Length: 364
Ligand SMILES: Nc1ncnc2c1ncn2[C@@H]1O[C@H](COP(=O)(O)OP(=O)(O)OP(=O)(O)O)[C@@H](O)[C@H]1O
Image (tube, rainbow, N blue to C red; front, side):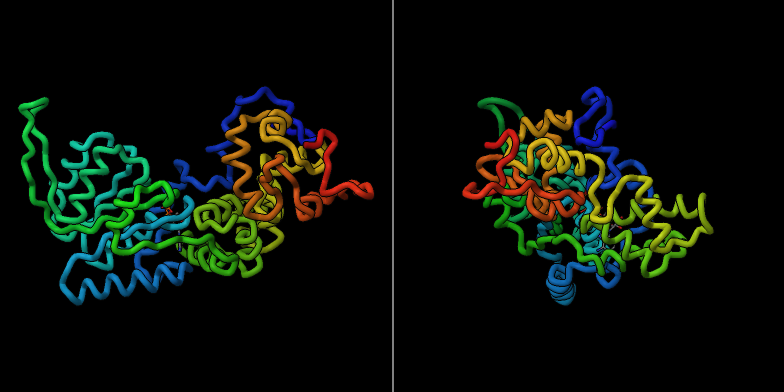
């Protein structure tokens, strides 16, 4: 990637995929998957943060255990990397039940789901990630399975097709979604408990980092953890990933101990700034400020200026910039906030008397 100082992209577009190889990407890459299993908390007590969800879930599970019953179906919603998979495994562990893991996109036909459901053991936890991406027929089969622990398996085709009812053992469905709003109400209503996972506070991420450091046998001090936490975008997965990169730096260039200075220098090497913005985020902001005077500017124009697809700017960079209060999406286009100017150390152009709002060079 070659964004120059003006924020313009000097590389040929698409010669690298900015989505997956970003150090601050919320989704898991291959390395994450390999180490995440070792870092996952195994019980609700070990699970950091999300106090409300944890407390409510604790009650749901304890009550089910006391009744000797299978726990109600649970829906977990929230951004990637906040711990939905981890919580589903904890639910199974707390219920002393086995867990089966699958995802919406893996279930394209109702038959795929019937095969999974009919092989569940009594009390088993079925974790269905990205449940909003399941096919419609599978979704309809799931309604009946969740409510009546029964599915109708269709045998044959056309007028001769017959539905054979199949009893299922009671099970707990844990559905996970990043888009709770996309779930059809009949599906949403069949969950006994819905937990909304929030982004983590810095102090919570510091606890995650200390715990991970201990498991990875690393030495990190309080200031080192605070520095990494502040750049982790409220997401434990990103915190754990940044920790591993800082560890590499500490091992190669220092004595292995992670303190504030080591964390700062290491993350500067990886171009993750003090607020967790990476090169793409800063390129978008810089273009908005330097080329368009802070906006408003249309998404397509902004995307061309940084040499990216509209979707990349809109879906990869903007959500975090909006969340951080650095950029606003307005009906007239993208607008930088005063915090954006301050973050990049730039001074907003003087507002001419009588003009309303920020008017860019290529304004509305
Ligand atoms: N509350 C937490 N305490 C400690 N570690 C956590 C916590 N939440 C998540 N993690 C760590 O973050 C990593 C990612 O968590 P997890 O895979 O559960 O996220 P997810 O929400 O299921 O993500 P995705 O939606 O991408 O599947 C795991 O390695 C896990 O150890």
